[in-house]
Amino acid sequence: MALRKSADAKMVGIWIRVSTEDQAQGESPAHHEKRARLYAEAKGWQVATLYDLSGVSGKSVMEHPEAKRMLKDIRSKTISGLIFSKLARLARNTRELLEFSEIFRESGADLISLHESIDTSSPAGRLFYTMIAAMAQWEREEIAERVAASVPIRAKLGKPIGGQPSFGYQWIEGKLVPHPDEAPVRKLIYELFLERRRKKTVAAILNERGYRTRGGAKFTDTTITRLLRDPTAKGVHRANYTRSQGRGRRAIVKAEEDWVLREVPAIVSAGIWAEVNAVLDAQAAGARKSKRGEHLFSGLVRCACGPKMYVKPPSPKYVCRTCNRKIPTDDLEEVFRHELHSFFLSEEDIRAFLEKDDVEITEKEGQVRVLESERRRGVSEMDRLYRAFMEESLPAKSFGELHGTLKTRQAEIDDEVVRLRAEIDVRRINHLSSEEVVAGARDLYGRWTALSFTEKRAIVESIVEEIVIGDTIEISLAYMPTSSGEGNGPPSTPSGNGGQKATHQHGFIAAASITRAG
Image (tube, rainbow, N blue to C red):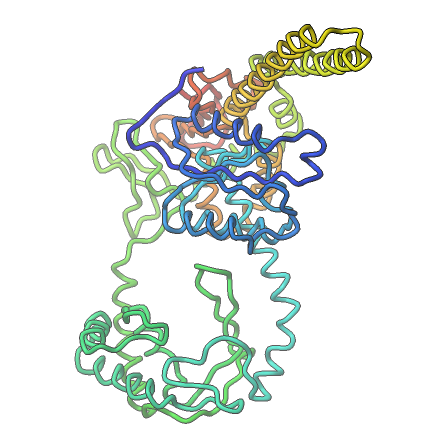
């Protein structure tokens, strides 16, 4: 197996969690570590550290010191990937697994599960993050539904409903009142904005004067916008007016009939608040006119004559600036949906793809079985020698020589089994998506029309390598089986990619042919 080294190699960590019960059944932490190291070596990655949780229960690991150290390393970019034997070794608690996955995704780090053949550094593996994000969203929505009914009642009773009070205010005996230190700064923000009309300028002035947010951070234009927009400053506190979408995502504003409004002491007059927000509205309207819209395949569409194609407002078409070739955005999405439909709704194709073993993987798995059988025979022989020695039918010298030879062979077998398993891991992950990833992705695509733009874009970025527009439309997908039943051959190197290129006649939606992606 060819190995690749690089001066700027990816830094990864190895996560070892083998319970006491697992160790009693013969699962060695040392073997798990060696298998992970060989995988990293085959990928040309450098192992920076080991997180050893041997004997730790998987019920809850998030608060374990080693887990905290690992998350700190992920957030600080000390490592950009974590290798472990299987998802259940990372966490058996579903909620913790979702939380781990979201932290990794937000930090731009990769999860590599050898047993499930998931490597999120690959296009197929990135689908895992897409599904995890969807699963986490569903769980958040389920939790939100359980608590939503109590929020309006608490708000109408004037009770705090969670979260920090707006900057400039504080809760005292269940009532929202101006904070003696923050309220003057909140008022100053409105005054500075009316004078300068620039949010970044207001933030810069506050920072230069030594003012800081409640958390001790410097003010930003985003913080200034939020504070200027908040009507609490004019004496109208809103509750139950947004619904969280989770960490890092903008909250959704609820329908106005769901809001709970109550009077609180004002920091600025209603007139000043209205004047400030009128300016903000005018600025936002101007920004919307100049902002280029987001499109599903932005950055992935290329003209057959060479350059990339972009949507040029107001026409909803991808346009080549060199030859002026065009294709409507809706037409291209429909072609893409047709290609997904041709694969993901075909149970036969999916089954054939998932059940097709790579010849080399099958051979190596056979070698592993032979070695494991030899190892069991060696253990039996060592037991026989020991009994003969104890019964004094075998001289001590002969016992030592024979036993030593067998023990050396057992160690060689163990090393070879670990090496073979690491090679199987590399080839399987590079060659195939795991069944969980493909089946889960199919479920997401089955709901394509109900997905948000953000979710669709995440899927497109995960599996589309390139779309070429010419007399035909060629969509190159990464790590997808061909609908013609043509298998992806084994990669020429450990990092080789399988894939397909779907060709559609320009002007109508019908697959003309499907060939291997080069």
